[in-house]
Image 1: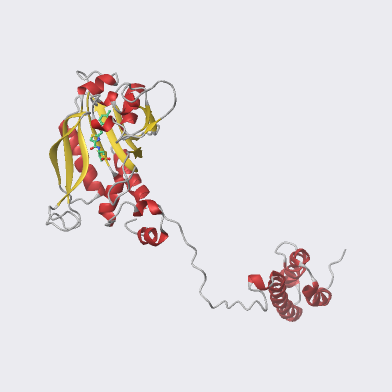
Image 2: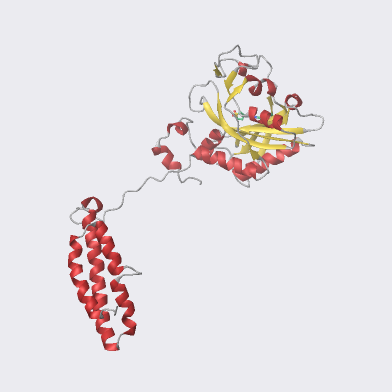
Length: 356
Ligand code: 2U9
């Protein structure tokens, strides 16, 4: 079938321009494809065929065709806006497009989550795998395996949240169930699960019978770490934690170790970092000392290794534990730990971009 003459095409299209205002949305889209469609649009085809027309026809038909294409595009947009109606800023919507848009609240990683991830990333970089475990533990995993003497104050009811699971288990018999008071049971499970070498970093929530106050919460985050292998010494512990401090705070950060005591490590220490707000010269944040206590650590007690099926005459290990919430409070200058629980956007939005 011979192609209709270009002029005939133009003449057949003009009436359809008027009719656009009567079409509903689906019909409008069909008409748009039929006329302006890139592949099969009648006007598109006509414009493509201009090349074969005699020069003076090309000029005349070309101008008319482009004119008509512009009119169709305007008419299609106008009909779409009309069909979209006032809600979408259609004609008569009274919407003032010059008004600024409503800023959509873009969520952000919670400051504590950011600190937990950052700390775990640093230890991943040192070859520590992330391990997690149950928040409800038996007393043995949370206390006895970790060399807590039976009468250790941490074990009694006023410090630890025991879970009544029925049965005859009683606090002190190792079988009682409780909400873990530290993530150390996960290290016990890790060592019982396989022979050394072991290098794990364990973030998780822990529970203590504490009332909320500016620096205490009954549930809080902890990150502990453990490295067990042949010939691991206190030097490895100090080197590893110095590297962590410099990665997390600044390359200029200094550390110091003060003797301490934990049932599950011997020798034990607390590690302080030079205050990164005053560089160590003393300020309110470090109470004028120039130092901030960051974590506890030590060499894994040989009895703990034995409890976990590891021969302390062959393997040694170091462990550490820190509170990422406290570290987040120091880093962001947060005065009250409860602010980290309230989910108050007025507070969190201030930290959304901070130190990302
Ligand atoms: C095993 C052996 C040793 C984990 C350790 C600490 C020191 C420590 C505190 C930090 C802040 C608790 O939340 S906190 O108050 N923890 O100071 N934790 S050594 O030692 C272990 C753990 C598991 C098998």
